[in-house]
Image (cartoon, rainbow over all chains, first blue to last red):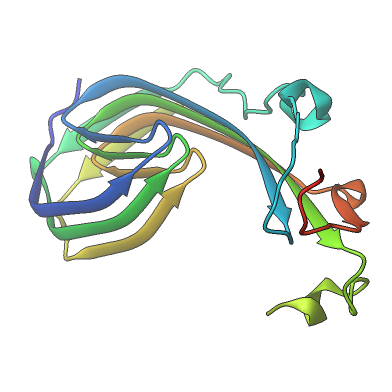
Length: 134
Length: 58
């Protein structure tokens, strides 16, 4: 399928969380999906929140991908059979992200995030949250 | 469509990435197709200004 070999001097990743993947080597298909409800709340205590993905429209809407309809005949000529890199340093990987060293056939990644802010109306500048930052 | 690719030498020096997040992709290598879709929603009704008490309810 592919001819090129990836050569990496060193690879350092500090943390990988929430279904993220560090992949070394070839792979034929990658399909990654992440759904997140992010709640930013200006209070130390959270009593209860029963948020469901079904409460928000963004998670039920279909993904819009550019359709690959054209018949494509691809010819690859690898004059140099190597891809060379030096040191790779990644601090953090999160929420279904992928770092791959190697050849991949097809990749499809989806991300949905709903962001909510809860601010305190008792504070002085409640109407202008920008002035209210510590 | 005919698509001809000639790969000459590819050499990268050091790479430093702080974060890869939310279905993002970092790839060293070759790929045939890539499809990425991302949706971020923060509508006006998601900014809720209400009294937030710090004392737990009895």
